[in-house]
Image 1 (spheres, one colour):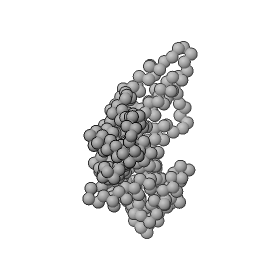
Image 2 (spheres, helix red, strand yellow):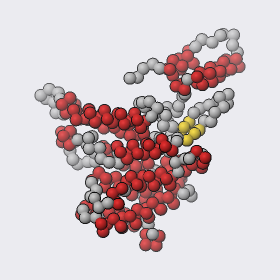
Image 3 (tube, helix red, strand yellow):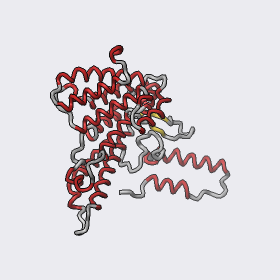
Image 4 (tube, helix red, strand yellow):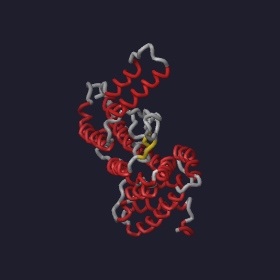
Length: 333
């Protein structure tokens, strides 16, 4: 529960402590500088972050603890216990037309999205620790590769595969007409848009160049990990469900936008691609996107003859055609 804690008390001490009146400006500055260095060195809870306005995964609103993957996993387990009870718990009087259910279900979906986004920020994250010269430490640092990989595995478990516990038809049949994308599908689109966005890829490339001796999470390894997660069905003959087909279509459209922003799809995707084009121009990011699309093209061609499910086969043909629209695969594959 939110409560007064170490930093609150420290901020009150900083802002409202009464200093001796005889102190001049230089003495006051020296006193406050020592107060900062001594206090923060003794208690890491007094570290001040960017209040969520930067790429530091430690600075997020409504964050819980120092491990977003673990905290969000606990949170999702709690949601799994709550969602099946919402119909019963939200019942009102005899005039209730499911307004309460609609409200609390949307709140549950929003909380799920919040957990996803807390974890997402670790990937391509940058630690930003404001320092004075008296403290002497580095301001910028990279998030460990193992932490970023754990974050991606979390997304694979809780987002890249359909969270059937959340897309509850017993609830949806009472509060939503089947005429639009579910909020979870929209979350998939939004997450992939940022995971495969030029801004994140270029940032990971710059981080790898800055910290080569810290085993950084290099963009090529990162892209290979996402590819493996999204396309794991290609090595089998199994049918792909609607949720995963949606995920894969979103992946392809985002990779096309990353390779060639001018060929990006929908309005938001086009806007994001245009904004990130300056980051990826004349870098290896677009080269990696092209290589990935060519690899995927070959994998899809191999998978089609082995696929028996008609919808899955049509899905593969569609994706091949989408890739062909921007890449001359006959001359480059």
